Length: 351
Ligand SMILES: Nc1ncnc2c1ncn2[C@@H]1O[C@H](COP(=O)(O)OP(=O)(O)OP(=O)(O)O)[C@@H](O)[C@H]1O
Ligand SMILES: [Mg+2]
Image 1 (cartoon, rainbow, N blue to C red):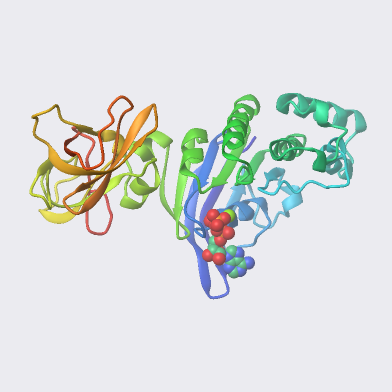
Image 2 (spheres, rainbow, N blue to C red; image 1 turned 60 degrees about the horizontal axis):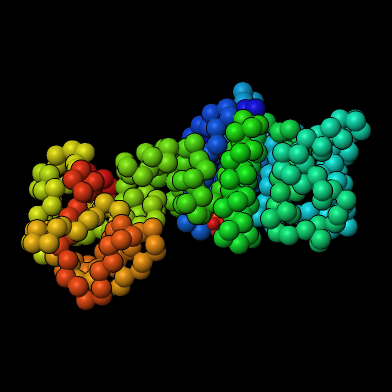
């Protein structure tokens, strides 16, 4: 087990700087997720920690050891990729033990580790098969098994679930969490799926254009996003943003309606945006006064009902309890849950 530190790292390809002065710490035993849109540098960062990619400036440490000049094979990390990278001609048992054999690990020790990993992942019955005789989910489990037998200080995962169908993704996601709970090894997990990030992470690093936008627990990012980018990226369906004029704790919508916002500071009156999550909007009792909207689309999901509505000219998503099912064309009065509406300035900073 090990902590990981990234200090002032700069990475460029030729003229093009991909990562600019990035710093953060990962605690020993932590499950850290890197999340962000495509091309923001998640894989590059993971590969630099793994030792598969060089960088121009800064320092990466695993435990107390700076590893800038330590080759990948000597970093005692194990990486699990999206495409499994299993050897097609080898049995599952040999796929799992190959790396250890190459290192000259004792035969009895290899058997012990393979047996233990197969037991954890419940793949004991597959050991004599070849990868082509396995389902996608089983192959991904074998890829994890191969990482586990190395008994690494740190596990690195790069979008390991993206080749699996939706149901299997949820299953394997739970398995990886269980694995972490059992092994308590530091894990770094890359995804562009914010639901995966929220459900798996102890803490999340939100990356944007090669820079850290915010680091925090899933609850921090959900409740206290520091920017509009994080607010819009975390949460599903995404947070709604409405153009407003902000004065103190009052935001005035384009429709003239006034809504209370929770402010961080007390800057001068200014135009900006109000952010409110779909689950923090309700409808008022009949005859009550709220923000008027017109229902465009109704999506009854059983457990809840999603509405696409229009407030003035702005599209807004609303999540209601499943037993409330309005009709397209209905006019409703929306009520924003007190304390849940956030304020952002014209540059997207939380204010
Ligand atoms: N070998 C390379 N040469 C030049 N540019 C590269 C190279 N590898 C990656 N890049 C660029 O670096 C940036 C970050 O790429 P990276 O693969 O880390 O993104 P990512 O966040 O993992 O994206 P995705 O979610 O699509 O996997 C991208 O703009 C990419 O085009
Ligand atoms: Mg990537």
